[in-house]
View (cartoon, rainbow, N blue to C red):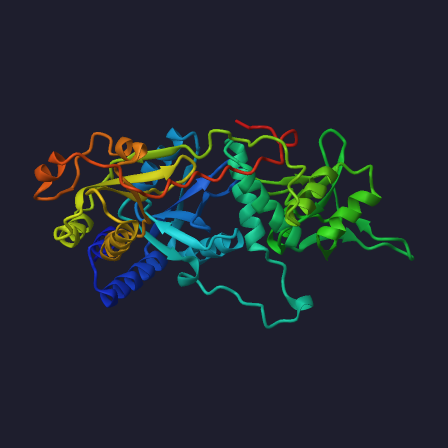
Length: 428
């Protein structure tokens, strides 16, 4: 029987789109039906490990236990502590349903250079309640649940930054929550669901979905109502004796909101960041790491070589991988050494056409480019040799180079400063 690894390798070597669709469907069926798969699990939050991959909340599954353990070891070196979790076929749909509840939109299988990325919607039917009246729709909130888990997960390791925080706060601002309560008797007002802190403080409880509410088992509060951001603000305004609001108190990643944070949430959601002045939780976040590809992609480099061999203005090309420190998967980085006097539009066209021939073999990784004549372009080649060198390279380097005119590399956008300093400390 063909294994997932064999199918993934074949998919990476196949250019024909119809054949790729067939292989992808076979892989999807194997993910659903294979006797056992493994998942990366985050004990700090008691949920599956998540990452933000190209604006998609991503979970990581593995076809073999050894591959999963290699992944957790790589994460351990980045001070991210994960566990290997086994999943049998009879529990597969429960796994997918839990990932959906936690906001996952994409699965990465076997996170290495030979991997398969697939939308979660291809593995399970995603419930659609859009045709139901608003009052009849269940409170699910997968997006806000995922954003909160990403934030709380990163905070456990001191990796959260202002972008992660603002993403979570803006989702809170626009989401509906479940608030448990006990109905009053004989005309008395309802009693709001209260969470009691060990030190004696009290918080209002709210939940992202019915599952989280049932998990907490607030037997004292038999009913639940839908509350939105304005309700949360009013609850604290009218009850100054309450410390704040706790979201999903029974989960491994509860989140606390106090009045100050609620006010910052509203301002940030409305675009006012004037009071966001505290530092990022991780000032070093965003460090760029450039390395050799773990598995040289010969198919991709061969197709690039075939394309550029008649392009006289391309002298040399390197293939590297690049990622920010907080990212899980790398991108391919193509470093091009150009002949003198090449117009910017010509360079853009070559990069675009290289992408067209390379992407079918890129195994789902994005491709980025840099010109060799930039200082960081030279530095990022490292000790690696170019995979392509033009035949007349010796003649090309004999001519003194004139610095070509090219766009200044875009500066990395500064991360937004954090909002949670003083409310949450770094946990070991």
